[in-house]
Amino acid sequence: MDLALLRTFVAVHRAGSFTRAAALLGLSQPAVTSQIRTLERQLGRPLFHRRARGVTPTAVGDELAHKAAPHLDALLRITEAEREAAGALRTLHLAGPPEFLCLRVLPALAPLVGQGHTLRTVLQAGAEEALDGLAAGHHDLIATTARPRGGLFSATALCDEEHVLVAAPYWAALVDPDRLREIGPAAFDGIPLVEVHETLPLVARYWAAVFETRPGTRPDAATVVAPDLRAVLECVKAGAGLAVLPRYLCQDALDNGQIVALLEPPVPPLRTWFLVVRTGSLALAHLARAHDRLLRAAAHW
Image (cartoon, rainbow, N blue to C red; front, side, top):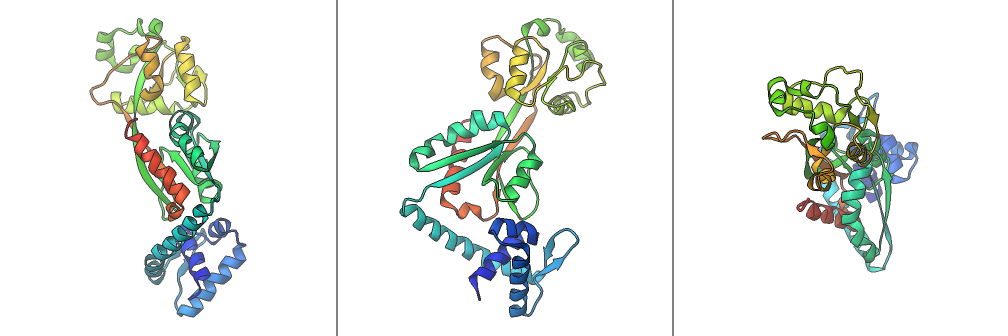
């Protein structure tokens, strides 16, 4: 059986789409369709159900993918090992939210540069956009808090991020702890909010986890909107209002008194980060090396 046909078949099986697989393989969509039809004729069985949006594998297709994919991945690992032995430089394309990439991911991967790697990053706050780029082959690895579904992606939990409700000392002094325990988040009325988006994603998640409610409609909601958590932190330090921030980002400011935690709940809200790659791509040595380095670094975050 032609290995090229099997490679195309596995790509379609993982991508769930002839068009998406064609982009990843560097082929035209008609070429991919033709190869799958050829393979189906050779086997005498259909491998995919054609749907209005993509394809789904038949039982025969699933069985073939289960048998063939590990061997194709092993061949890819052999090829990559030979390329590395020949001294070929490899570029790793990364994407994710700017603050997490800048403060966590890139410092952890920086030592790879001395091992012949080059790094290219795309700062994207939106998980959907980053996943679309990964699916299209524009990125090799993304960091996201949205765990994807489907066979195209492989996601590994990286770390948990604790969220803290913070404000500058001036605003914190206006919050009565007894009143906060009595009436909940209404005790913050009158304090401006600083957020990454008008929809208050971090504040809403914190309110739901800690107060079991949603932020009320306020005329001063999202007084400052900055799509980078580092900018949110600087605004909070300067007295712009309260915000919900990851502890890793604001711990130094908490330690030196520039900001104050308005509440320390017994069970703090957490958000899980995932490393996401295309299924099978960890057979690429440079990508597997970066993936492993990030997992080891995250144990200390």
